[in-house]
Image (cartoon, rainbow over all chains, first blue to last red; front, side, top):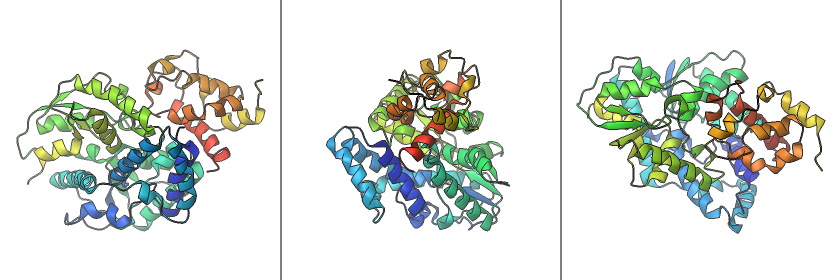
Length: 321
Length: 100
């Protein structure tokens, strides 16, 4: 018995409406990565994480449980869980992340912030006031919940006096740059990915690095937002040799991650196909630029291919310490 | 028996995001789709444009299996906004069937 599509989506949409996020992460935990980095609170230009990197450990934990339920009688538990989730946060039991994953994904955001600091880019952060951008609800066609949430996010940003956003993942970039303006009258925020911001600076390596790095383009960055050259330019500037897998740039192959919460088995098969293409590069490592791509491909690759977020490769070259 | 639902055609095709009528039926989208599901996306859009609501709903799982990766769009010769069209159908199902 497959997972009940309507109830899996419903569980996440219910969470978005009641708890302002699709998975159960508290604002305090979502902002914990920024501790001791000295990032000012608020400002006209803010680093907007959209909580996607922070949510990934919860999604990974939820998918593990979904895999156990998929194609078994246990899949009915999702329907029961959704009913009780209206009263108590049942999803918190379905998605309990490992401490190691929370630290690892938080470390990626820290790298991104350190890279911007190294490049001399001034930015603030909204800490506990930052909200998830709603990409999952949008993709699933839960339009009413998404539109209400988007307005909440925008109103919050305006109240804080924000004028421009530096985003850190493709899905949040797409929501805030290309989707929100079609929903919200007078939308006037400037949105750039940190890769675009960094590439426009003259940040230089402070440490010598080398190695052959294959680039896995995110579908959303490459085909929705046109962010293709910047990651390559930054890796080359850092000192790496960039390798292109079969199906790269605008014709990149999806990692399978977008359907992982509904069809984990199929998503894993798509991920394995992409890993084969990446393995054929015989690179020292693969660079991803989306947390969903990274998690899906790491799971599909096992020990076969080393897959890391691009910020780790860049921080080794551009950041002190 | 296949039933044509005129209200369904009106509802789906009146969405400004839905432009599957531009499809030339060449099939490149299906050939390049990583999901390798014969229904996606061309046949699904035919069902929608013909008002075959029951056929669309019969394939609800496939509608949500689309990755929205836009590999099809990158290869489409008719500039069909395939991902947006799939989202339109999801919007219909999410609201009318799942009650979201």
